Image (cartoon, rainbow, N blue to C red):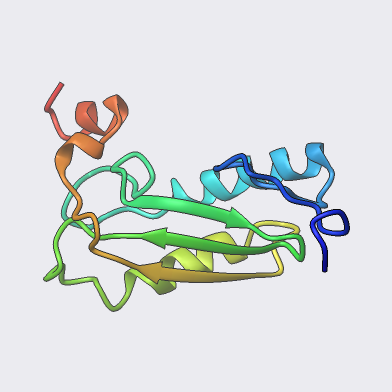
Length: 124
């Protein structure tokens, strides 16, 4: 394929989607809302406000891919948390499936917490 035949976008960080803009906005809001129903059992705040969610991708087929971490690699719910996230996000209307990838790179630190989470744990 020549450069003339291939559509090239050199802008980094731009996500292209065939999902209509309004639907993508609703799905994004609903996925975030679902993530806010999942709580870290050791900290009284949800995983989204804690900053445990590093990336959310909604693909054109409405598959949601989430990259997240835990507060510590030895977290006692490490084996259960991905399932909780899959169940919560999978219940969102319009989502075709959910994949959760766990990572510890970069490691989570408390400075990833939102003000809301800091208030919930009494740090603000």
